[in-house]
Amino acid sequence: MKKLNEILAGIDVLEIYGDISIDISEISIDSRNISPRSLFIAMKGTKSDGHLFIREAIKAGAIAVICSVMPESFVKGVTYIKVSDTSTAAGTAASNFFGNPSSRIILTGVTGTNGKTTIATLLYKLFTGLGYKSGLFSTVCNYVVDKKYPATHTTPDPVQLNRLLAEMVKNGCTHVFMEVSSHSVDQKRIHGLRYAGAIFTNLTHDHLDYHLTFENYRNAKKAFFDSLDADAFALVNADDRNSGIMVQNCKAAKYTFSTRGIADFRAAVIEQGLDGMQLRIDGKEVWTHLIGDFNASNLLAVYAASVLLGVDRMRALTILSGLLPVPGRLEIIKGHTGITGIVDYAHTPDALVNVIETINRIRQGKGKLITVVGAGGDRDRTKRPLMASICASGSDRVILTSDNPRSEDPDRIIDEMEAGLNDAQRPGVIRITDRREAIKTAVMLAENDDVILIAGKGHEPYQEIKGVRYHFDDREELSKALSEKK
Image 1 (cartoon, rainbow, N blue to C red):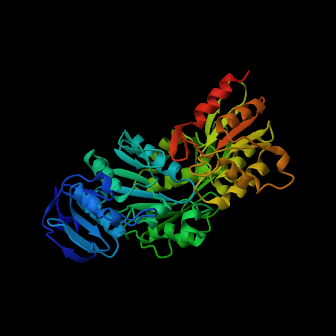
Image 2: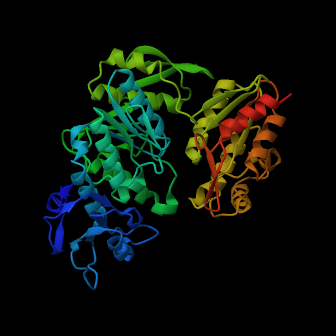
Image 3: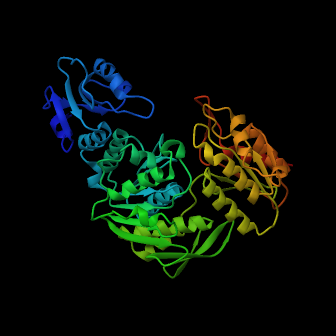
């Protein structure tokens, strides 16, 4: 239980009807999850307006409502609080209700188009390896020490977020690492949280279906850095031209990392193969289990952040050398046939360029690269032709297939991908809508020393079609097909 007036601390309240000294047992932004004596926050979302469900929330037991528009009539015994912005209020209210958990831990956020999951997850693993009780919010899974919680969004809503942060505090977590999506910043899901540090990876073409313009997308990322306190750190990738923009108005201490030029933290790739790569970080050589220049940048960010969080440099490098790849990120699937399979989450043009260039650099013309790729439905359509063209330019054979079509017709999605192919690329590309058959066909076409890349879904164990998620795991399908190949 928490007093309503305590929950309202720091919120810009415009009007109150009712008693704010009442006890609140729970807080929710979803009228379907209301329990007796709850506070309901009527948020305006991208698909629905919580104000339309105020009466349902009250019928379910809500005794207080935060809204931006007061209802025409009031229910006796219910307190109504009008605020200027319910999204901002939700973050502050959730933080207050759960005891401001972000102020009792060392919270580090990671944002950018690519690399968020890898960096956040490896930081969690590094600090766990150092003996700290740690927490993780990621696209793949959320962790409270070693207990897994399913991840429905890259960054949860403010109530879920603060509830899990409070659980982390309760379980003794000292450090928490969080992927911070552009959606979560724009929708103010992280409002009210206190960050010890923020990391910027890169910014490329993505999420324009939501943000509409690249400038809006960039500004959403930048707003995260604008919100940092003066005693926090801002660590940015100097190899990305947007890094300077990210920290223009940032009050935090600013640091840079780079694999190409001058920066506070630097790394270089010495050599690499499919089993790992040798890096030089801070003048020290270290072997890692990850591959790819982009992963060299990710590992450098992990190292730099750990140092900024007080870890001894040599200790950080020692733990770093033992870290394994994140599931579904350049994950190697070996068959007994002499064919190497790789499953990767790459679902943006830039990510596909990085993965394909990495594979081609390592194989050095030996064998063929066969790429299986699709594009998600109900998402940014402008990247579809680019993705097909990139795959066709860097691969010997390409199979265009279904990803998560969601509400769209998968064949229409593939049509839009094919539109990006030129006459020289078309002969090396085929289309097989059924993803399982596409993977089987790639294996059938492959010979010894060939590499098969299955791109787009990575760790996801499902395929979403017409609102239903069916079990489908690229890693399982590729492993099975390779084992059955004669």
